[in-house]
Length: 499
Image (tube, rainbow, N blue to C red; front, side, top):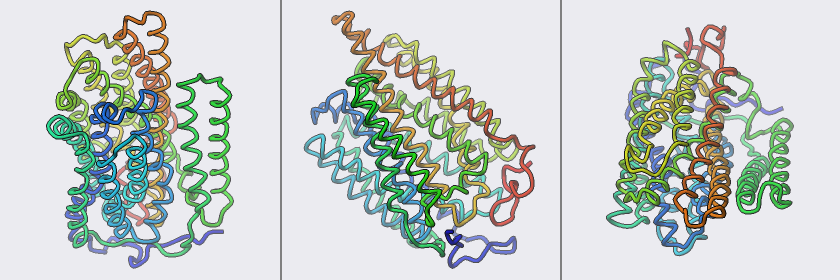
């Protein structure tokens, strides 16, 4: 049996314990650190058409600039969360910030596709340590229920703002400088975050079992990579191609092996107790499905705007503002809404709105009006997903033992990132298949073939959103169903989700 860790240097908190007087400054620094992760995802989407042309990347392989990052990020997040718990969350965040900056500079100097993809994978490795360290620092720093709700709201708003900044900054840098500056920009952000974190963020770690499940990390990452590769092969040669079936079968075996490993090892990367809470498990499942649909939508909508509507990079960045504005506004409203309703009503309503928006995207026709038909879908998806993210974070992390804060944060980030990687690869398969079919029917109608590809991808994303809505509706518990200890945080204080 594994030794259940406890928070080192910080005895169990009581209501009499004075909160950290620098906690709000620390939140600002933590938000800035995680801004890089959000910024990088949105920046690369805007820069990718130019990077693809500059480095001569094929349509079939362009998604690796996104998925190489997402796979290493998601596949190593559990190990990153465990490292943060044991080595110290502040120390892990500082090292990861420095590493992320170096990897970004390496990518900015990329001379060929392999160098860019390698840099993106390296960014993902450091992000896998940075993200859970930062989010778990928020969890352990804010123990008062009302303050924690506000902290999660600020954290979510900054993430949404990071998406908007990334789109605008990516467009500006790509248009007036070069796409490479979309990677270089991470360096000064990392430096500022490091300088701010040293005096403001309080160290937090756990003691007990200090071993690492390296085999578990290998199984999780290898299985994730194999799954994405399988989807990519399916796009080139079909789902029944022997190579496709073999790769997907290997992925399934590796991921099953990971689960079995976690159940049997004395020092699991993912203690299965983290998954036993129904709300937490439902949040993780929603994160996978919502992340898969959203990441894929952002990639293909970027190409639709820049390639087919002939938007400049900065115009494409501006075109995403309705989406990001909806997320930001809803995140800002969460401190008032979430304590009153609990997560379930917000998540179900939000996923339903996002689903309607995604299916409306399947009606795009290439006309220039209303962002090519994307304005209303963007608004619906922005408001909808804005209603989902903060409640999802809170439901996943509320009530978790402080010793498991890092790994729970890691699982939440991993589900979103791996969902995004799978979604981009899966939707790219639908896109290439439909586009190839359209060109085969009428080679002269390239716009029609492209639109058929986009519609197929958006339709698949809509199905993923339907599944996320169903999970939120059926798996998550209503506020009235939360009983006893489920209404309390690990420190004994009432949960912000309690009735």
